[in-house]
Length: 546
Image (tube, rainbow, N blue to C red; front, side, top):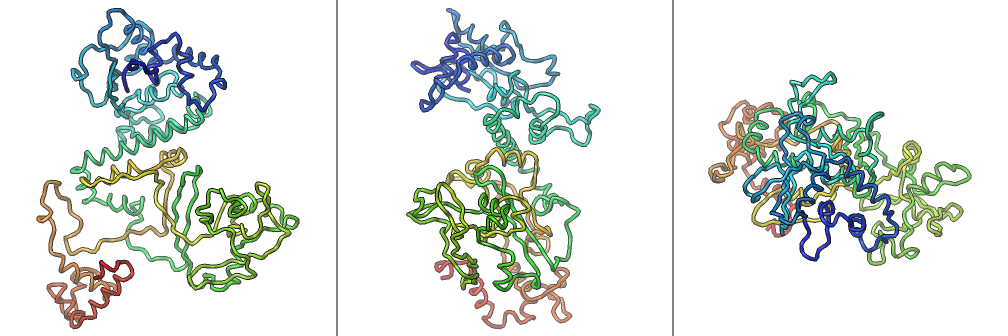
C-alpha cells in the first residue's frame, strides 16, 4: 500500500479516502470514477450508506478512521500503521479492534520492524510497497465490499479439520487452493455476499487464482534442493508428468479401436470449450465423400421441416456477417475474412489434394438466417454434426487444427540475463474468472486415453540427474557417443527387454552399443548418414542442414 495521505495537490485514492478529508468522503469517492462515466448516474445515498455500513462493521475501516484522527492532531508525528500477520492465537480472542479508540500504531522508521508477511502502511511515502498475498487481511483490504466485516482470509497455519472438528493427521495444513475452493462454494445457508459480488467477484476469483499460482511457483523456487531429489527417487515424477493416478502407470496394450485426447481452453471468451481429437481404427474411418456427408453438414436446415435444428444452427453455427456485407467485422483483416468466409458454393463434397475437405454447400436461397438485417446462406455455415449439435445444444465444429494452442496470452517479456521460465509464465499468462474457478476446483484441463508418457532414451544408470546450481556443466555432461548408438539400435531392434538384451546380437552380448551396431551391420556404410539427413529435412531449416 502507499502513503496514508495524498501527496501535494493530488486527490485522495484507495485507502486514503478513509483518512483524508472525510467530511467530503462521498464526493471524493464518486470523483474516482473515469470521466467517461457520468457521475449523475451514481446515487449519492447508496455511496453514503455503503460508507456508513463499512464504518460500523469493518474492523479495518475503524483502524483507518483512528489513524485519520491521529494525523489531524496539531502535534502530528510520523505515524505508521502496521497490520500484524501472525495468527498464533485464536482470532476470536485476539481479533483486530473495532472501536475508534484502539489502533495498531507503531512509531519509528519502517526498518525498525521487519516482517516478510506484514502489510506496512507509511505516511508521505513516494514509493509503493506490495502487500503479501499470505497476509490474513490481504483480500479484506483489497475487497472491502466483499468482506464487509474485514474477515481474515488465507493464512499459512490453518489446520485441516474433519466434520467433527478433530484435526486431521493426514493433512496438517490447508493449502491456499483448498481454502479458496472452500470459500467460493455456494451454500444453502449462511452469508453469500461474496458470490453476489458480480464483476467485483470475478476480479476476486482471478486474484485468488493468481495468488495460488504465485505461491505454488514460489514454493518451487524456494525448495529446489529438496523438491527435485524427491521427485527423482519416487514415482511422483511419473504421476506429475504423465497420469494423475499412479496405479495406471505401467505397460498396457494400446487399444486398436479408438484413442482420444482433449484439451479445455477459454480463449478470453468466457465459458470453457474443448478441443477433442479421436483416432479410429481403419475399418471405422470415413474414406469416401458419402461417408463424410453422413456425419458432417454445412447447410441451413429447412425451417418448416426441422425447426429445432434450424434454430440451433442459426444460433451457434452461422459465421458473420462479414466481408463486403460487413467490412468492419472482428474477423476482417485487410478487407479479407481471416476465417475464409463466405465459402464457395459447391454441389458436392470433394477431397482436396492438400488433405482438406471441401464440404457440400448448395446455393439454395430459400433457407437463410437473418443476422443484423443481412440474409446469410449456406456459404456462412460452419461445418457441424447434427446429432452432436442437437444433443448438446452448443457450438460444436469439425475443424482440422491444433488440439491445444497453449494458454491465453496478453504480452511477453524477453530477458537476456536469466532464463526464468516461471517468471515468464507469470508475466504472460492471461486468466479469466471462469478459468480461475475451473482451476481452483481442480477440474480437468486435459486428458488422454490411454494415458502415456514420452520416455527418455538413456544409457544404463544415466537417467535424469540432480546437480547444484553452482556446479560446472562440464562436470555434469558426459560424451553422448554411446547414447547415439543406443538410439540407433532402438530404431532397428524391436521388443528388447533391457540394455544387455539390446547388446545381444546373434547370441553374443557385446560390451558396448557401438560394437553391437557394428555387429548388426549398421556401421558398414554411409546409409545412416543419409537416413539422418532425410529425418532432419522434416524439421530442420536450410542453414541447420548445411
